Length: 160
Length: 124
Ligand SMILES: Nc1ncnc2c1ncn2[C@@H]1O[C@H](COP(=O)(O)OP(=O)(O)OP(=O)(O)O)[C@@H](O)[C@H]1O
Ligand SMILES: [Mg+2]
Image (tube, protein in one colour):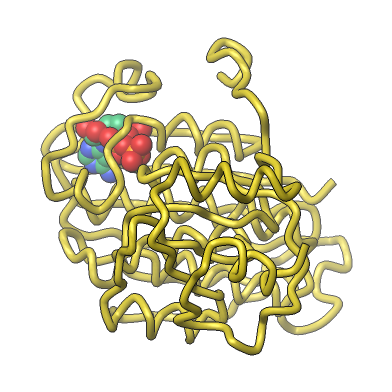
């Protein structure tokens, strides 16, 4: 997995950067179809947030939503770029994939709806819970999708 | 109880984490479906499962699971063992089936990390 990483301090009037690491944007790539690497990005996100002293519960929620999104990319899409944005008051994770897209988002969001094939189910996934779980563990969740192009998820978790 | 006691109760083999046996554990979640583990398991719980692929370890790591207990005598692949070692997650294997594993632990005081799921309408 390639890791095109960059640490950028966001512009803000507030004293955002207590340390250089606070308020950072990092970018990761996910390779679709490759279950060997599935979970690498969310594991990285988890350890980055931990190192930045983000509260444990926030780290855990961020890890869960990014892992669910990552498994979906590996299961259904070709590839994706993940942006992790850490601000003093929130963590935002964006996942932009190139893939088939989701024809009916409302349906896909329903608990139990899944198009997962045997291979995905053998790995222990494909219960149609992931998107619901992302919604439950995020404070703000947006999903956009275009059939034949790809899907974009934006997940935001507030620190307070 | 300690992970050491879990090992005794389940007559389990410690595959990863001999040095973690003093870890205190109180709760567990059992499932072969990682989708459900992700939705319901709580931090600090043990994960009882019959799945042995690397995603079990990834899932456990994401959720801060205390230890993975493989049931029905399942043996993990080398990849799974190495990942558990890298991520510092104890990995045990017992010959008991999931039902027996859960029952034997429950009898000795381990409880579910949650008793019942909330109604779907509440979760969404
Ligand atoms: N990135 C994506 N690209 C294309 N389709 C997707 C994507 N993510 C989800 N879907 C579609 O939405 C359905 C529901 O996704 P969701 O994550 O809720 O459940 P699942 O992946 O099927 O199972 P689970 O997440 O419980 O293991 C999927 O089965 C798939 O059809
Ligand atoms: Mg999913």
